[in-house]
Image (cartoon, rainbow, N blue to C red; front, side, top):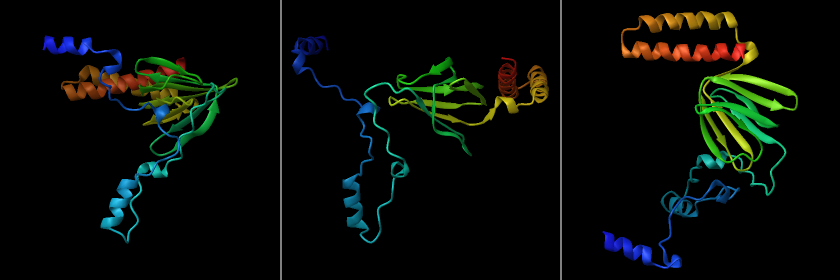
Length: 203
């Protein structure tokens, strides 16, 4: 094994084996591509039926990566049942990532972040719109587009403080009286979510 390693390291740099890897998102063409091999194979088997479309066929082409950093961040904020923001141009968003509050400005490095219960802030000039999100993911692209997908979300100003306090007290009581691991886990989730809701209201 050591003899093989010595031969590998002794190779000239231009003869080193090529590393295989996936292309970055910036290397992927902005326009959707058609798998011509699949289409031809399909027509040979079922010539009287159009080949099925893949999910990418229903998506808008990805905008090309600009050569300079744009002045605005384009945000898409969606829930399973609604679209809160669609191609909204803003100055900045702050998302409650599991690693901490993360501010996203135009030109942000491409990132995927998991969301935890907390406040999502959308900054547009002097206006700041705040949403409470339960969980989800944020996808930040190289072209200054941020896709935010949340399981549940509600504007902070629509949250009832009395219901938050009531729920926090109930789950705290359930946590103290829980006897099984499942009961403890469910109660802890309730405490964490209601504590985050309370922080959103008081913060």
